[in-house]
Length: 245
Length: 223
Image (tube, one colour):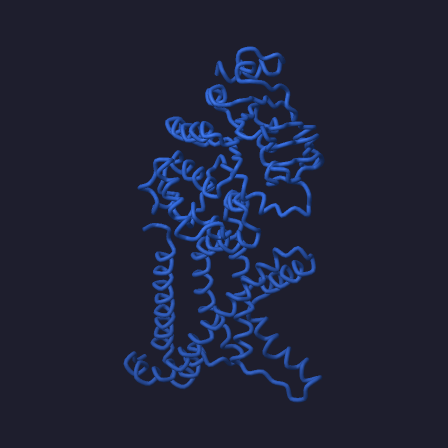
């Protein structure tokens, strides 16, 4: 399998606060990797470094063979192929659902208006929200907004998707509908990096689970290994904490 | 104290003043809007000198009374200029427009600044993550939302500008207030004249409020 992401010796600090302390990570094409760990362990920061929403302090990050931290890199071009889904959905408040999805492909001249609309309608159908095309984000529930956000990211035809706690801001009854869309995406072979607190999802869908603690990847393995037979004490403590909550 | 007399005698005079008030206010709002946007962007510049100019401008305008600014522009500025250009003078209308525009601009730049910071960081990150450049994100995502957030405060500022234009009567601008002063100076009809002036202002500002309500409705995201 082709290598999609290669992170080498990544450090990231915010002022005196060292958040990532030497991350090494490789992700192959089509792989679904879930990042789990306590709040503040650096999961989201690691994810955000992958498309340079955060600048790394040192180390290298390669995505699709582009060195992300290279200042000469046209990061906007690379980001077109890296979809991202946020905890707070971040749909454009001033645009309808349809315009949210067609905006970037049209603006960046990847598609004509007509093509983008056709693609958007197909994506909306796929996430089960065809009838909401003309609604504004604030008229939708959280789960619906997040499904639109996924459709928006997919409209750019990315070859890797980053999910930053996509269900953490949702009411419990809406978590399932979002996870379902992500599950389908994983089954279609999308390369996915998912920061999540949904252990069930990680166990079912992930090819590999990374447990992060205090800025490092403390343990990694198949869901089977991590959830039923963790080797490190920090992992055991974390899991007993979240699974028995 | 005769309302009907004031109504017939003073109306032509007050109407002339009204025209001046409306024209100078509208021009100041327009010019102030442009200044406000420009200064707001200057305040976000990478260059510290540009940022400093914007900050000093807003600081000075907000930190001094408009009547003093009007005196500076109308009396003090020509005095300095006439040292270089013999016989330099400035029209009351021009001086008034400069003062009023600079004032409106300073306050509007703060309104725009507030509007931009009210747009959540998430909106910007979403656009950037899709591959949009910083400037396109500003133009297509941030500014439209910031403008919408700014409308109530902008309308408030428009109203203040209309009312502040009355201060310019002190430098001789022939606005409603000045015309009324001229009229009561001759007739002593203080009560009916100033009541009429007050009603004029109420009407102008009410029209302004109705227009802004329509604009606000037009810009809302509801269908």
